[in-house]
Image 1: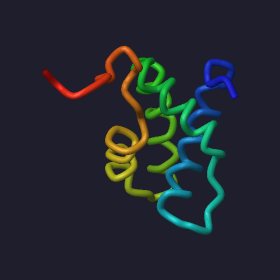
Image 2 (image 1 turned 180 degrees about the vertical axis):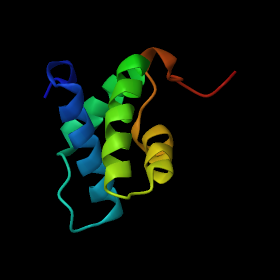
Image 3 (image 1 turned 30 degrees about the vertical axis):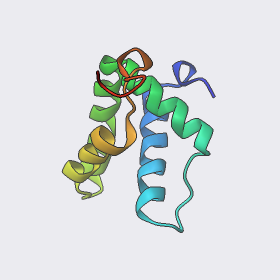
Length: 92
């Protein structure tokens, strides 16, 4: 799966599925490779991440879901830093 080939709505749907799968063991989420690819992509493309979040937040609000909890998950648990921003070893 190439995240850059997905629409913003498709990315928001994948985020929603990953979020629900992490919160509920019975929910079906994306396969680990898809999840990792999307997390990396959003970490390297903050403008896309913001656009996807806007779409997903609208969906969450319409469903009466806790958007603040979902945004925390997106920022703190899901999105990976861009590889150029990751530390390769312990600080010196």
